Length: 85
Image 1 (cartoon, rainbow, N blue to C red):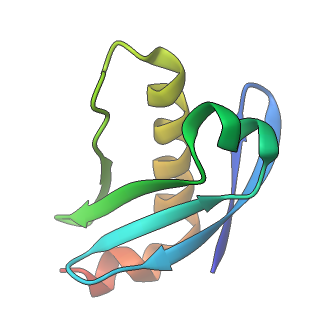
Image 2 (image 1 turned 180 degrees about the horizontal axis):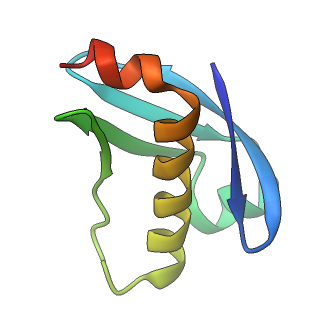
């Protein structure tokens, strides 16, 4: 499964790998994003909402990226939200 998300005015495509217990791994497919944030970001679904853990909330770039990705998952993968309840 793939999602498209916007970050700083550009559209990116990322793969999703569903894990047990409502966890989702987002696989970034862009060299620049991978260098800055790593190749994969963890998300989880709780109460029909996509959530993420940002270890350092003052890292505004990571927060902006995670927010954009969680919004894309919510809009493009509604079936994941329903199945996780």
